[in-house]
Image (tube, rainbow, N blue to C red; front, top):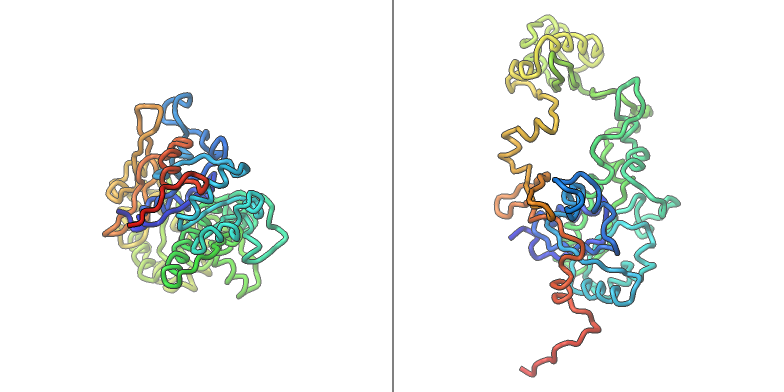
Length: 396
């Protein structure tokens, strides 16, 4: 039994942001029903595959963010399927969608309509630019993807080397961070409903989320009027806090406190630097000179030696590849790699585990992702259409 075992979620989302949000809920035990349009989620066919693309039901992209859900294929443009969806809504707690603003209204499935079927419904949307109900702008209705959100929200402007172009962050943070915030909003709305009996609309925009993610750029610009830009792996107000080349790779060192700096200088056998630059202000003012001194030291040692020399006394770590992560005992001890079956082949696929840990109701991937429309029979039996014959009521 997960912490959210009594929560029923209708998931109309596709691609990444919405499915990641509902995946978080499913990992915590929610019954997530993935309502898929005819043909299914757009990313069902995206590679990679475990063995054989011809026989496997879907690729790794879909498997990763849709594990532990049930699937029902519906065409909301038809009366029959729309009626079936409304019946599901009557018994659901949450509806999540990530269409452009106005799309659900065209299907006669907008928030106001669904609230008539279920006054306590929590309706949540993830959009590039939010929903007019919570703040109308001229951007609403425009399509958006992770790259657009990172560009507009300031992420790309502060990412990359000082002399290089604006750079996208590797993971799709425009999708994933927005999704995590939306899950928080949904659970807050559930808590509010438990206290008041009121449902509500939860709206999380990718553009808004990226501004929140870049929080330090906002207060920096407010304080000094200068728009922050790229500075590689360093930090604007902390030093040393950077990546340094080693004899066989790279390591990161975060020794910005006075104590950490003293320890770093001891490991480098440079007591002169510790004495000459004893406080944060002096180190920041001379960061170029000090960065060169640290880099000269790290290049003399292999990555593991640099980390060992600092010996847990100074925050430091190797820059790992995904292969390194798969071999890290810490990752396995934390159950951050989970194997799920891959339909169509006698093989499993590894997906990222849940980063949320709980002592009594531990979140975890609850099985593989569903095949398209795999759970139609059981779902329509659980949630019969209003037009279906209903059993006669007993006089008992």
